Image (cartoon, rainbow, N blue to C red; front, side, top):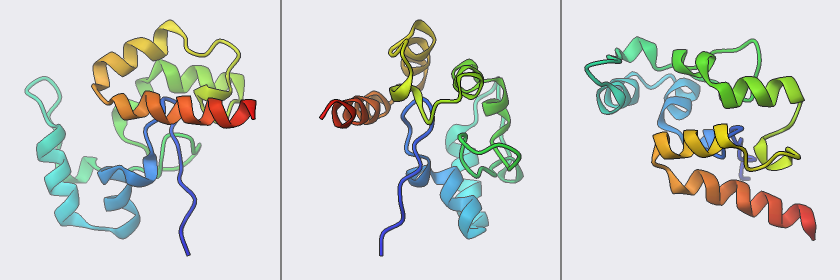
Length: 119
C-alpha cells in the first residue's frame, strides 16, 4: 500500500524530503546527514533542528525557516491545498522561491497538479 504524497505549497513533495522522512522515522542518522547538507555559514543547522511534519500542516513541527516562508503564509491565508490551486498561480513570490530552492521538480509537481485540474 502506498501512502499519499504530501505536496508543500511550493511544490516540494514533503513525503520525499529527508527532513520529513527523518522526523517520521525518528532517524537521527538522517537528521545529522540532512543538517550537514543543508547548513551554511549564515544558517548553521544541527541534527536536532531537523524536525518537520510537512509545511502544509498547522500546529505540528516544521523546520524553523518554514515559519518565515512568504509562500506558505500566503497559501495558509488563502486556504489553498498548495499553490497549484491558487487563482494567482504562478505568482512572483513563488517564482522567487523556486529560484532560491534550485529545485525544478517543485515547479514540475505543481504544473502536473494544474494539468489534472483542467481535465
